[in-house]
Every structure is written in structure tokens, then in C-alpha cells.
Image (cartoon, rainbow, N blue to C red; front, side, top):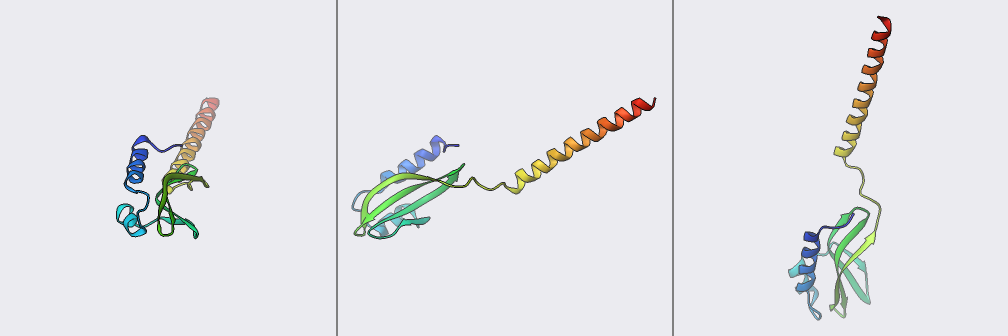
Length: 116
């Protein structure tokens, strides 16, 4: 599964706003607080606007060297797929229930027709 073009445009706009030489405080004004720290010193990489899509986490990565931006890019890393949500789990239980119900009806119908 891949992010849609709207999401790419959103990330591209964020990347375009962060210029080389920008300080951390200025980046936080633009992108908000970072989602997480990818790597600490000497080159600190912070990730902003992380979003898990399928089995990958996408986010705007900003690399700081000596306290200023040296690089800004869209990064992604593989991860475990999102866990099954309650809704989809409930949906599977409902599907199983329907299959069992239809099976029971077929067996009762067969027994009734055989008894005639």
C-alpha cells in the first residue's frame, strides 16, 4: 500500500518550507513538534508528520548538523503492519456467523426434504 498523491503533496509542501540553515526552533514553528528522534548527535535526524501506511512509516525527515538544517527529505522505513482493528475483527466474526447460519439452514433444509 502506498500513500496517495494528496499525502505526497502535503509532505512535499512541508519539505519545501524547510530551508538549509534553518534552526530547530524555526523548523518547529513550520512543522510542529517532531514525532520522534531517528538518530542523536553528531547528525541529529528528527521525523515529523509520521504516518503508518500499510507496512511502512512515512515522514518528513530533517537532519540537523551543528543545530541547523543540513538536509530535509521524505523518508520511510518498514515496520509491522497495523494491527487488526475492532471493526474489521467484528466484521470477520459477523461473516463467520453468517456462514454458520447459512450452513445450519442448508442442513435443516436437507433434513426436512429427506424426511418427506
